[in-house]
Amino acid sequence: MITYDTGSMIKIICQLKGSVLLSVWPQMAMCAGIAVLATILRASIGEDDYIIKDVKGHATLGTALAFLNVFRSNLSYGRYWDGRGQLGVLVKSGRELMRLVVAYSKTPEEKEEEAEMQETIREVWRLISCLMHSIVLAVQHFEGHHHVPEYDIDLELVKPGWLKEKEKSAIEKAENVGRDVRDNKGRPALIAALLSHKVYYMYHRGWMNAAVLKKCDKCINEFVGAWMACEKIVGVPMVFPYTQMLSVFMVLFVYTFPFPLAHIFFNEEAEFNGFFITPFISALVAFAFFGMNAVGVEIENPFGDDDNDLPIKKMMKRIELDTIAMLELRTTSDQAEAMEKLRSEKAEQEKLAQQKSRDRNALQGPPGRG
Image 1 (cartoon, helix red, strand yellow):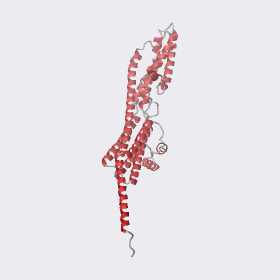
Image 2 (image 1 turned 180 degrees about the vertical axis):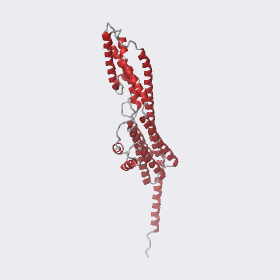
Image 3 (image 1 turned 30 degrees about the vertical axis):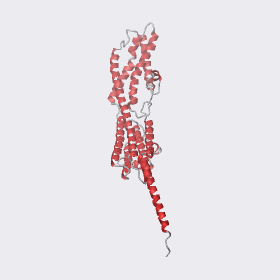
Image 4 (image 1 turned 60 degrees about the horizontal axis):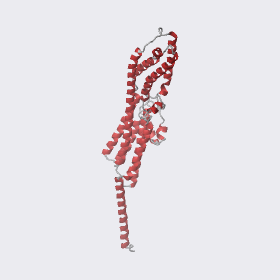
């Protein structure tokens, strides 16, 4: 996603990175070339025999076409904003789930059990990150929009440490059940199930109560809901007849508009002026119409790797850092301090009991000999 200084108009105008100018310049060049040919035609056949002498027809069509073009861009921006909202749900659910697990889990009295619980919480963090990455991968490799091959689970999930080999084997086995050809379209649901198992294990061990378990399950449900909403954005393109009609009339309008312009700007006394003004105005018109259409096409799917797509990788990294940082807060919580104090008191009591036992044995003396 491009960030820019909204207060500097000059920088905005001159910046090329992220600009649709890079994608529509061929259409602009073609329109300028047609304008040159139209000017040559006007100069060669004269005013009386020229084919189009006014822009009334183009003005009528252009007004309606501009409205339809802007309407399409607004629809695309709605999809873009909805996609950002669903990514926000992923981030919120990840943070909230980790907060619930960290803050509302009961610290065991035994240090060995506490170490096991800490390791389980860390596993929950790993599976939260794994679920978020799997959702992003499922959306980016969705077959309804992206004609891309199936992603490599070893490279994307196992190698970074989000998924264990045993879990990967279980997922691949589950993906074969009931299918003639295995696919990974439902993989986030399987990883969500692994995460649910891990959270329920904490409840089963008594480290979490039922109310917290219910809230954690709600967060996992929100993960799945956001995944389905993102797939809806990617899997349902703009309606084809609308896009087709808009493209047809836009091509007809833009590539025929230079002909009336050639007549308007042509001057018998200064013929070369028409050869400069007409191509320039025609190229601007092409930039306006094709550029607005290109904006709509580029932001229609906000989950790709284009300059103006959403910063998914940065958001994933941010949530990883935020959630792992919550693990450190357990060491400074009141519960941890109280448990440490309780353990110290218990150890002191055991030490005193052992000392009393030794003193009592010393007073009784050695056992008598028979």
